[in-house]
Length: 504
Ligand code: UN1
Image (cartoon, rainbow, N blue to C red):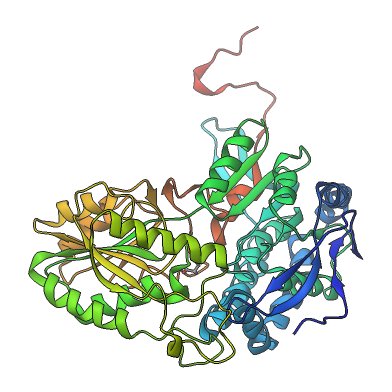
């Protein structure tokens, strides 16, 4: 538990500071409504101070080798592992994910740190044969400089390390704004960097809201912006940064993700995958599935079994190991999910399960102020352009969409959203699986698996409205480094490529 006698601060230039603003804000446990601690609210002036420190620290940090820089992260790797249970509980208390998910968040963080720090022993560069015999050509990677990171609440430990671990090992300095819903996780991560002895100004953390995030995005001293979060904010960032030459943004946003269940599916695998993908994290992963595209031959049996699960899946105290779904993150989000459930009714879908309001006896004692919602499941026309089947809800709001044709039709339905993040096919037929693999418009494609639970050493990102670039996992290296093509002439003659005449 955070210490209630103190107001937690920003970490700028190796110091804990109140910053320049007067305001504070509270972190709230979404399962109980209790306050977890009070935090200073950062202002654009605080971001300015953090960016000044990060810019100042660049030269010294870049003078270290990858391996020396990685040493600081190895310390954090060990700490994450040693404090697994404790930190998992903090994640669960602050963002409401059930405890196995809270712990998995911490595990994912140390996997990322391990990948980035281990990668220091594999510095990246290429020797490329030149088309001219006496020429050597190389490609070297260099850090871009200052990386600004804006991270979401739903993976409050893992995603910051997706952004920051590779950035730092590659020689960038960092200014990070944690999500305003999970400042306690932000505080703990900053303490870890301090304990690891990271040089002043290399890592900076400013707590706060959208205005602080915007100050990071707008500032010329930031060379790369990494953002994971909502489609609205991501689009705004991408278009703002697109208008600033020399600056780069890698954004990963949401999805309206599908699972395709063909007539050749193993229905045990199908139901299990759909329940995991739709209800884990109470549907609040960017990779959660809200559309289940099911062939008519297996539709009735799938529906019956999925509905049975949706009716019975446990919603409750996320610290209890028996719980499957915790609360939603905040009251405003509960209102949004409720509105989408109501919208679906107005759009005249056939509602199969409606647990929008839980029964009083389902809510555990002491948790009356939590933001509870259970599954909402309905069937709708797969070819109709309804808002409820096309807009991301980010909750346990799930449409069953029946199809009757072949795999081409299923994949057409699958692709019929503006998003393209994650999706899965459940089938025992390799031709169907291969067709899905080659034609589904998504960045993360799964076969006979839930579409959540990506591993950090694979690229993580989407297409269409789901994002540009990879602010995450191993591919983040593309966003936080730039490459120099270096060409050396080993002769006294000037010889040109493309057969260009060198006569003067
Ligand atoms: C997210 O939903 O924002 O693939 C990230 C997964 C996790 C990351 C999810 N490794 O489900």
